[in-house]
Image (cartoon, rainbow, N blue to C red; front, side):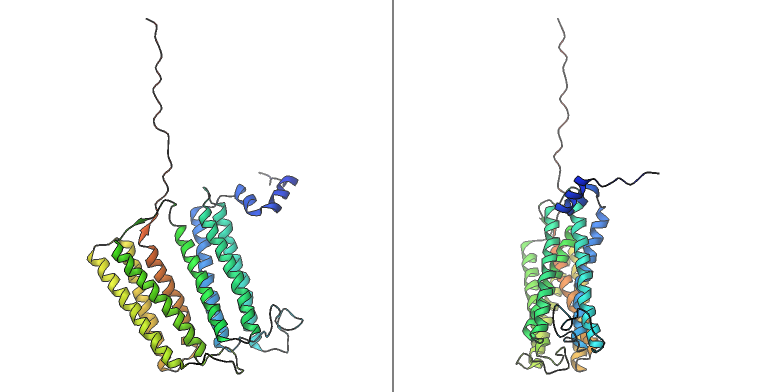
Length: 336
């Protein structure tokens, strides 16, 4: 039976000074482990958006009326509070699960051999986005669910999802310089698609800020604009995104593009169709909470689909390692 090596004093000091380096020196994860860790962080970035939407849709946005405590003098809900407090507090606790997932992705990326500094930086970018959005979430509560801060809260969560998608994609690639798989015209069309999708998400936050779901049962100020008018603009932008996606698929088929961009574009088109159906049904049924929640989930999936289309336009093969050439033949001098 092999004994467990003892931790020396020098090891303990090294672990305290730089725990990530200490772990990396003693553990090398498989590539599959790194991919799973980054995917878990991506999934949690979506879960936190959906649960945040559930807080708003159940009117639990001020279930914990202060921050960082739930109530004055208590970090957790008290018996005097309602189930809204439990919902809001549960969403706050999920932030710790998100931090754990991001931390696991950072540790796995830092421990991979050979070391990929760019991958680790993407993990740390997620960590700081989580911290920033946690503080912004506290501000949202302290200002009484101001709709502009709520919109910023969602957009910062979308930025977190963006970095998580890029990091997950990078774990499946090498570190060589990217090589384009399509022409410049196709790349420009995809950037138009990305821009339209950003506008779609931004206008969607305005619809939320002006709509009837204020996030709390009290009188919460809304964005002073007719939400139905903004919803129609949102629908127009959605049709533009759908049209650009269909045009992209048609062009990729015409130029016989590689399988990757075609597959990602087809997936995005199907997500957009499902999201469009949910959007129109919720509009004509006066925004039932369940459908609004599904629409929020769909918005995350649409954005992930757009990013995957963009990232599929190039490939990053494994970096070639320079190997020494064949050894020179040794000639043994002979005497005449």
